[in-house]
Amino acid sequence: MTTQTSSEKDLHHRMTALGDRLIDVVIIGAGINGAGLFRDLCEQGVTCVIVDKADFGSGTSAASSRLIHGGIKYLETGELGLVAQSTLERNLLLKNAPHNVTPLLTVIPIFSWVKGMGAALGTLFGIKSLARSRGALLIKAGLALYDFFGSRERVMPKHRMMSREAVLKEFPGLTRDVKAAGAYYDAQVRHPERLVWELIRDGLDANPHSAALPYCKVNLQTKDRIRIESEAGDIYDLSPRIVVNAAGPWIDTVNGALGATTHLIGGSKGSHLLLDHPELVAMLKGRMIYFEADNGRICLVYTYNGFALVGTTDQKAADPDTVSCEAWEVDYFLERLRVLLPGLAIDKHHIVFAYSGIRPLPASDAANPGLVSRDHSTPLLEPDENRSFPIISLVGGKWTTFRGFAEEVADDILPLIKVKRTRSTRDLPIGGGRDFPRDPSARAAWLTRATTVTGLSIERLDQLLSRHGTKALVIAQHHGRFTDQDRLPDASSYSLAELDWIIENEGVSTLSDLVLRRTMLAMEQGLSKADLEKIGDLFAALRGWTELEKQQHLAALITELRDRHMRSV
Image (tube, rainbow, N blue to C red; front, top):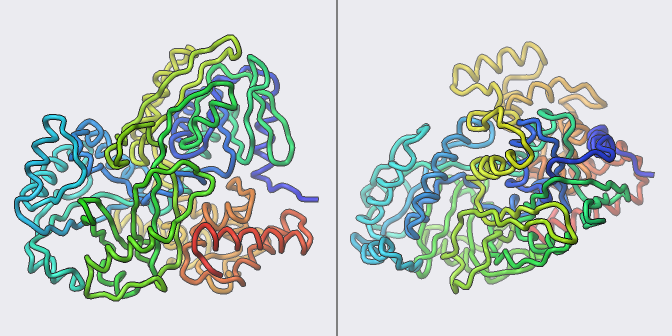
């Protein structure tokens, strides 16, 4: 019989402890928008429950370009308010989650001097057209405007322009057709799935009466109640005052399960590749190239976890449960890179990982998904004769703006349940970002103190600090069945003690949760079948699996890695 970890027991205990009490807010969908709202409401003392059909942060939130950006391309569609909010939220995340969100120097190759100005002027008069070539004058004007919008809470340098000679020197594989380049800073989120979990954990810590549960189904049970059923068969009937539908591309499906027919979502598919290409990674030097592809479409390539991450497509799609990177997308990415970087040989054999997701964009008749707004909205379904509670659907939005979006929704909800805001999240650290050493001297001091307390080397503690933030100290002091010297056979930067702590404390339910979301093992260069076998042994010992059960779980994970992510082990 399968047993639960202490973290899973805590999650289920919180659900059971709710009993028959009236729940202030139930959030359905534990992606970045749902998790951000959960934390904000919990910080105000609101009793809140968040649930998901799968793992926390396993849907669209795990399929982004892993960027925290101000949305420079939204200048082209005239969404200046969205750029203003995005640049502010980017700067706040750099301060509040410095363990996970870091500056990213971005370079835009330029292939003409004046092209695109006519289309840009047309945008000012409401004429939107995504397909355009962007010349140096337009890029310069756009970057200056981007700097202006990013001035609030500024933490990074302003843009600069680069000559043809300078950009070819910095990127020797780049096409000789380049005329100049613009260079500016945005940011990357190294491990977005962990940030989602940290937000949920922060919410649970802020309010002991709140609860979170993955892997469950939700249905309307009676006029006043919804039924939540876990995969293990546990049933919880809750009476919510308000339901928030944060299910992303599944929003219409969830509303249907609650007895409301809606057509709010018109999804757009985005895919990405990871390339094991040392020459390309060495040329990038930790920077991103943000470049035009065919018909003015934007692509990107940057260094990520020792690989080169390439993205993204923007194609209408409807089924988020079966989405994966298709052959035409692979061909498209590789051809775009060959045109941009003719000095490098890039082929399919360089691919080590792929992922795809559906952006939860609002339903639209636009022929080009790139023209659909990335802004957010909150359509409200009032109570009716079959349902006594309202449903607020979180439509659209983007990773970068989750905190501001959550704040807006929370400020709409709080008066309805007669609760006053007591704490702002604007300057609230996230997870391991609390007390994070922000400069080299502070980091060195933190590591020196930590090595005295734990006995681990400064090099190992530095690795854990980069991975977990200041939670690294708790992990380094974990005394379980293993020591830090017990490592995975090939992906040896992960110790068995570290994985043991994560499984026991971070709401891990499946092998996939651990390998794809709580850690970056699925994207590690050295991941092998022997590593997965060792991880299977860890789970088997904690769950009481038989050898047959362990092998079944491993087979399911290996199939998922192969079929959904093009990852062979």
